[in-house]
Length: 304
Length: 290
Image 1 (cartoon, rainbow over the protein chains, first blue to last red):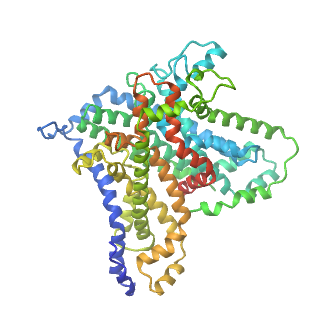
Image 2: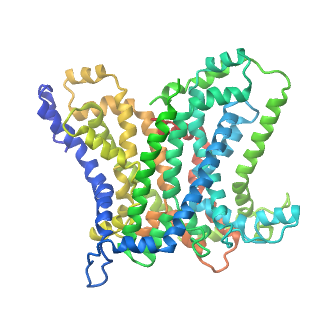
């Protein structure tokens, strides 16, 4: 693909040559892109109709059997519900926190450098390391959370990660902690792009801080909110690293998410056929969300 | 790439803002709340550092003058082949970054400055990768790696990420801002297609390369699920997988040692972040704003 050097000396108005150059430039990237994204996506769909090949027994065409199994699978519905709750629990909270953090850091308050560093640091840490640190926090009796609640309110020891009622919420807290600072960056950029004259004008008109935020700052940051929420939704389906350390999906799948269930199905029980079917479900959800969000937000993003 | 234009605005805002009054209750309250949240946010990390540098007897006892020790790090370093894990991660991250820079640059240049049949269709397919990431296609990608006989090698971890839709998009946006005149001037002087790319476009896109590089390195340093699936030996495991294997052993390893190991694996990234905080924040910002 580097053989184009000499040919460029010819007049470039020849369109055919330009086409060839472009295609040669694109070729390496496209090979990898197709090999590891597009073809696997299609293959996932194809394999979702087949049984898992075992030993000498090749995959058998099953029609919709895998899909029927999925619909009848209580664990599937459990992890779907968990994922919904996880998304609802993490996204609004981390976006709200991100906006508040950005407003503070953008203000000229004392020690701004430290505050910004504190907010952003979790973003740099690997999710695995974050989970290790928080695991220690959550340890019953011994961990910091129990020590604080025990000495302040006299609460008994709580097994936050071992109780089906609290396990997922404990994971949500860790995720919010990790993500809010990351989203803050984008709001910070949006805030700095707002013309100061707008805010000045509103102040002259006697608008209070809250009015300025509600009528000027927040609407102007709407494109950022769109971008961040798309990101957050994708992340809520894509990031399951901390589950491995914190709860391993348990107890009784109380904190398992869809991608974690796919991992378990395909790489612990080695049911790749059913794993493919579950992956199709995940792909369908992601596409539906992207399309839905695009149309939903498209109307609200444009302001007068 | 609007980020490069907004870089100057904070100073502009600061310069135009009127001087604050000596004491302002509103500002004081905001400062206080911001600090409380900041301390809360840094607490988990501070706590991990505390336990790592003190003997395990002080894991949950806070005394200002508790004896400091480096022993936990030594124990962790001796208990698992962390040196090898670091080397693996280093090789992995370099391989991915080099591949991404090469492939994304070429593709982004084609999308930015050439007209050819199928351009918009192909570009849509590239953007599709922002949604359907290799992270999700673990089942099929594992089959591919087995077919290629690459399971348990470092290239197997890297290959799915080398053609990054995000990188292509980011670089294309940057290349689009390069003035056509520069391009044409170089052409008149007889520069080849790759020569123009090398001498005109890449130097002008340096900030984008830095931004994308930082985001990519920190992302792949931290990546876990795919490396976990595709590796199963010490010789290939990156630090994240190594750390999880290390802390998953239920042999009663002390918390202080696990925390020391956790800090150790994140230290290079964390130190780089603290030293180049501004660049990091701006890079993440630049990479986010399209």
